[in-house]
Image (tube, rainbow, N blue to C red; front, side, top):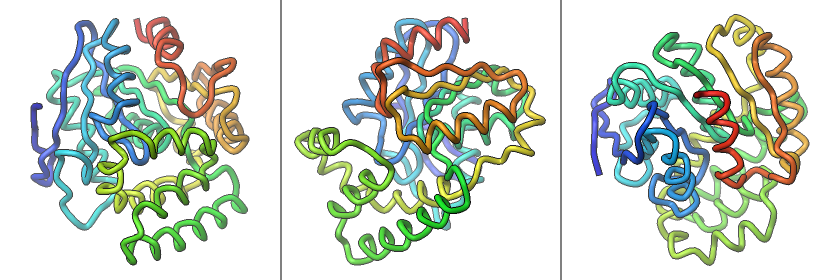
Length: 259
């Protein structure tokens, strides 16, 4: 494990794998750097890239300076880019894709290329209202300490299949996921926003949008909005893949686009 400091002094823990161009891996909700699916993704991507796999704040071995803001998460990404040499590719998944996109808009040339998988914005105002309602129920569960129930409720609410949730619960790392359940409040804050189509229309960072063919309909609608807003963005739907894609399939897209 390595550590660095974000702008506000928060310790950010990370691991580095592989050789090649630097790739910052920004994970989604309930994920942390040593979580089995995340670790598998990172090691596969390391076949072609130097992968910086870090714990987002409040997770794993990273700190959790309060109050939480999205801006602080973007400072964490910048801290990781600085560790990687001041410029890097950024790959974000789900809520991490939202952070990656925001980082590209904020950090300019520090993000040399951007890849986002299944960006998890609310796709319209009605969906936004539903997500805000979900957030209120989730907050009540977290305030009552019902972490197991909160994680299941969140995963079901964003369309994760029951069998995938069951697999997660059987993992020996489920207990670690329970300890980071309070960070779900952070992800719901991020994902309740609508795609910022006006702002991202000005984005000049080379961008690849990827979604799974079997990902929720809302994800497809969000990706369509984003791809229409960024004139130069490449857009691909991975046949047979869902919100938790095969990293070998994703790596093929990453390699083609980034290298």
